[in-house]
Amino acid sequence: MSKNTIKILGAYGGKAANMQLTSLQLSKHIVLDAGNILGGLGNGIKHINHIFVTHSHLDHINDIPFLIDSTFTDRTIPLKIYGRKKTLENLHKYILNGNIWPDFTEINLINSDLKAIELIEIKINETIKINDYKIKAIKNNHTDSSNGYVIEKNDRAVLFTSDTYCCDEIWQETNSNKKIKVIISDVSFPSRMSKLAFDSKHLTPQLLKNELKKLNRRDVTIYANHIKPTYKTEVFSEIIKFDILLNGGTILEAQDIIEF
Ligand SMILES: [Zn+2]
Ligand SMILES: [Zn+2]
Image 1: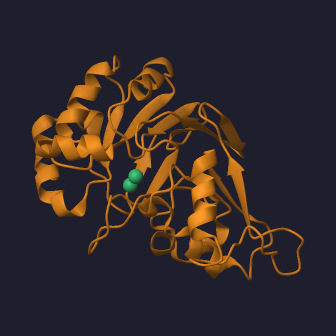
Image 2 (image 1 turned 30 degrees about the vertical axis):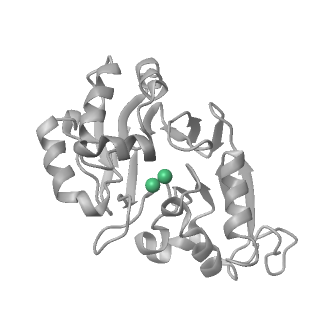
């Protein structure tokens, strides 16, 4: 059976020249987080019908308003956005509120009774099936309504931590679910900034090194994601120094393809 793939549309925790915000394309119709959907997909945006959001921080939702705006007139079915209850409430209350952007959850598609955007709650440990994909929300440690996802297809899976600080459940999930072959982990700040990492609930190379002690498997590939552009050079060299990208993992960049 051919390998499953995920395409990285953006892999940074901030915006800078040639550095795009977090977004992953699972299939022609499904993306995870909305940091860089339009720039990453070009004409492919017209096929996106499902967005799984990990939390409501701006770097993970910022393309949702522009995506619905750009695809509205051609759309025949709603854009479905999945996330935890408060994530969806924040998106609705603070972005799609008629002031910052039109409330597309209340706007009908042209020639349709269906709304342009449908918000669908997902709970921790709940799985949503779309075609060949099973997408499960898992606990992480970032905001009060954040989550990671395990994306499974053909009995193989990727765990996306999204933004997270230290979190036992991520490693317990990986230890118990042998279908997981790949982890895409937050590595945002240099190790010397451990206080900021704790306060903002992100990992550093040193913290991820410590977290990996909770992993009792050695067959999982680890990729790094969500580096803050300001600290790119320092974090890159630390990731190499701490040797945390197991089994051929890399520091992710837009347009990379992950196989699993
Ligand atoms: Zn982020
Ligand atoms: Zn965040």
